[in-house]
Length: 129
Image 1 (spheres, one colour):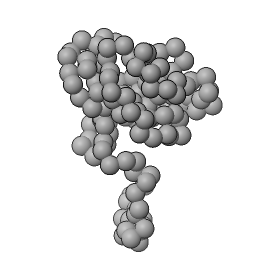
Image 2: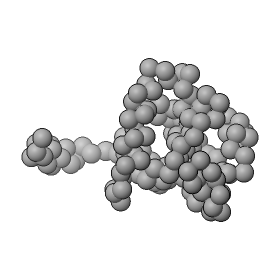
Image 3: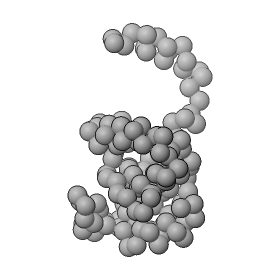
């Protein structure tokens, strides 16, 4: 579902203001406004919060389904202010929507760590196995 109009139609009244903000290994990432909070399988708490939505076409990602499951499992167990918060996920037709905290500033992959490379190497080298 590449077009925003299709996303809005699929989202119904749960989300608004979709904006494509990136393309990842598993799918496209959108910024949206969460209007109703995901509680279990039900959307029932009124809200107005910016979120990131990773939309993955499971038909196109058959080989990566195990990796996607691991990502969701790890994110759902993390409770750390330095890790993007996972809000929930749901399936719409063949598309898996992973709803996460929106972090402004772009992808970590886009950051230039060049000037910190030697310091990071020392820190990583001293991390116990």
